[in-house]
Image (cartoon, rainbow, N blue to C red; front, side):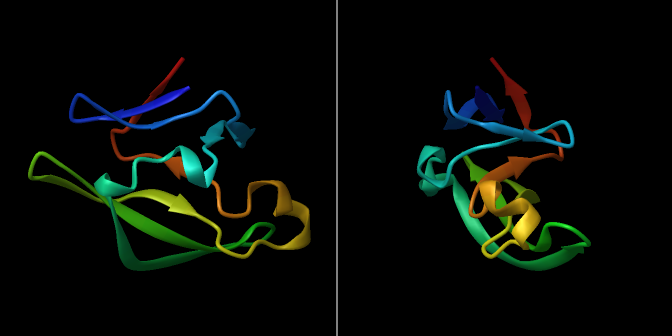
Length: 93
């Protein structure tokens, strides 16, 4: 699977995990040069507290376009640290 934004592959893996129709990419599959930590956090009742990344490609920024759970609740341990996308990031095979 590939995550693409602004015509650039920002993550790529053949080991994504699909939860609630979102592909979660292993932490080592993201191209960290495009990711900046965000101060945004949200809470999921069964996964835990999500942290966000903003994505910056060729000077264009997509705020809070990726999220991950640094420490998940027990039911979501499989995706701890994995990264998922939204806000126009295309995830394709």
